[in-house]
Image (tube, rainbow, N blue to C red; front, side):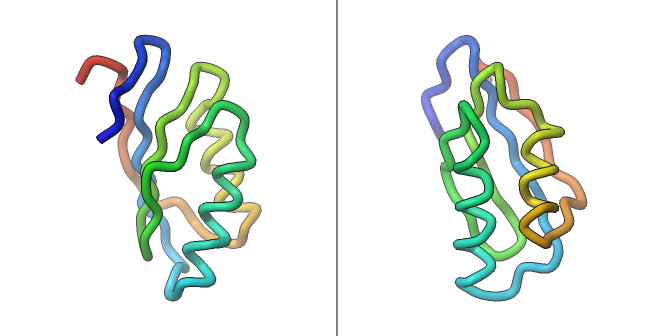
Length: 81
């Protein structure tokens, strides 16, 4: 887990439609394009990012959906957890 700074938060996204390494790369690249995001991990079905205050969950979901996948759930964790 990232050592979150006070103004950052962790986001876990559950993602449908991913089935291979190409999917993992596409989601990673889409999330890396969101300002303030550091991608911790991406695997088939899930992505975990460390996000700054300028990166909202809605922006992350939009990036994944624009890459052709569907966010079905996940969780946000504020800094300090």
